[in-house]
Length: 195
Image (cartoon, rainbow, N blue to C red):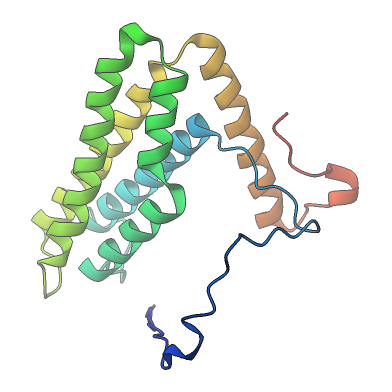
């Protein structure tokens, strides 16, 4: 599959002086959902597990005729970082929910996670050819590291918080499964809520 990226640039600075003095508040737009930092950590760990599994399956010949390009890893990692705000969510989780006695260990795990994600992107960006088997293994190992560090970070939460976020995770997974199977009905299933 081919991904095209188009960058649009403002062609004319004609409206540059018309900056809003106050933010626009539309009463018809509902408030954004509350950040669920532990859920984001679990979901990013799930993505890392999926990426690792795909790379290892290709490497081991379990999936034929599939190639992952370095550009896909770079682009996918950038999207993951931007859409999940994993760095901000880990910081919020550490500051607000992890017991103080475990925060140093949590910060180390968060730093290891971000370093591994950055390494995936930067190492993949250096490759200008098809990846070698050793590179597939290198990236699979980096995704494994991300997963292990995020799962370790989650385990540093108090039991009550772990149970809460696991419940959110199960609810979102069930919701996505119903959508994927085409059996989700908002009238019968209701709207996905966390509270």
